Image (cartoon, rainbow, N blue to C red):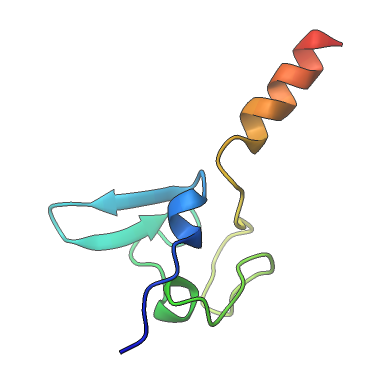
Length: 72
């Protein structure tokens, strides 16, 4: 059985719903597709099932950008 890719867990858009036991995110509010969860599709480009433009964004990138723009 393939193991789940942990890259989603490092994305700032990732959400886990304990009530439905489903991995979700801003890009996929109902359920992250298995090919993304298992690392078969890199979410640095739009997925065919996607209805928005949200892509993988590592946790901390936005914080770093805000810090840089505030310290300049």
